Amino acid sequence: RKEVEQDPGPFNVPEGATVAFNCTYSNSASQSFFWYRQDCRKEPKLLMSVYSSGNEDGRFTAQLNRASQYISLLIRDSKLSDSATYLCVVNRDSWGKLQFGAGTQVVVTP
Amino acid sequence: DADVTQTPRNRITKTGKRIMLECSQTKGHDRMYWYRQDPGLGLQLIYYSFDVKDINKGEISDGYSVSRQAQAKFSLSLESAIPNQTALYFCATSDPGAGLKADTQYFGPGTRLTVL
Image 1 (cartoon, rainbow over the protein chains, first blue to last red):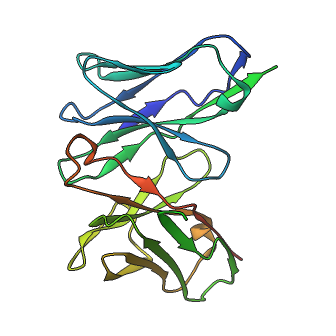
Image 2: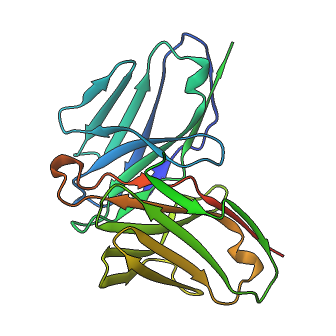
């Protein structure tokens, strides 16, 4: 079983719609959770950290479910510029090492 | 100016050649990392360094070596390149003293390496 699993997609989303997707992680001791965004063959960029109580940043909402070991990302009012691959990232240990999922591709269409 | 830079951005080389990828950062972070990314796979950790004197192997270190020349510089070498090392390589940094952001990693623009 992969340490971090994501649905690769693509999720085809009409502009203005809402899209949500999850990622599951296997290490119950993980403490830090992130969503990164990666545009085609470019560097991953931090989208948001995910906190225990869930958090929101503009049109983006992240949730953490420790009991079921998954995190989710919801994008409201999708923009064409939201088209990207979203990487689920979980810390492996207390020494700063991260485990990356393979990513979920989102394609927002006009 | 970018905080994390990588050179070269693209490189084509032949099997058996030695190649070095360089990473520099102006963020003042102690921790630096090298990853490779293959299509359909998550980023895989090659080597990481917590400071100039502390270098550690990641999950896929075979065939690679690194050098931490200074806090700001971390180089990755392929001693004898082979075609299955064709990939996108990223350098990243993090600041362990950043509180809640201690595990956040910041990436360079990547090096696209092709081994023929």
